[in-house]
Image (tube, rainbow, N blue to C red; front, side, top):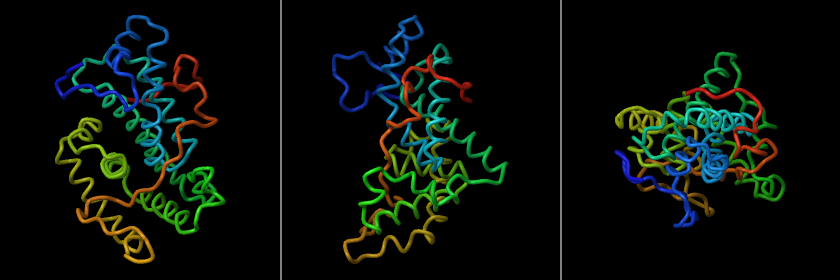
Amino acid sequence: MATAEGRDREPYGVDADAPSDADLLAGHVAGDPDAFGELARRHRDRLWAVALRTLGDREEAADAVQDALISAFRAAHTFRGQSAVTTWLHRITVNACLDRVRKAASRKTSPVDDPERLDQLLEPHESAEAPAERHDLHRELITALATLPAEQRAALVLVDMQGYPVAETARILDVPVGTVKSRCARGRARLAPLLAHLRSDGGGKEAPDTEGNRTPRASVPPAAGPRDAGASDPSAMKGGGGHR
């Protein structure tokens, strides 16, 4: 489906003959009981990655994605095709994450202050067998991201870690392109002294980024997990809706 913001792209691996995201969303609005579940399955992995990197906690991320999918399920009739469906879904997910970050800040707590919770962010096969250097890199990256204001963190997660273009990130966050650029620049400046030691050359460590505009990357656990059971079918979920 062509939109004012460009063609609605389907995730890699989706059959060319399969319904588009826009078709699935329209089908859901028209009463197709299976359409939204398929749409959620297509995008859940990327939504989960954004939520986990923004929140730094598996349970919080699972709850944020669940809230976002419930909100999208209920608000599908409001979608007007002015952006890609995936952009719309990411916007709802990021808003759900930012709501949780702000609530945590108001309680003066941070989910990544607990070393045991930091360990939960490692993929299962990494927790025991991974080299200590990789383990420490992951922990330090998550800890450093947690020091950023929520809006800067969300912008960096989308641009530097998820690889979204600045223009699309601006649509997801519903802010001007210049705002995304300034948030990323400020976030990188704050992270630079915290992560500078990770960019030293030697012993096969990460080489410096010649563009100077990317944060170090870390692996993200797969979307599937005990908290995600049934997440592709919001009508079967428990809990309240998310926030727009």
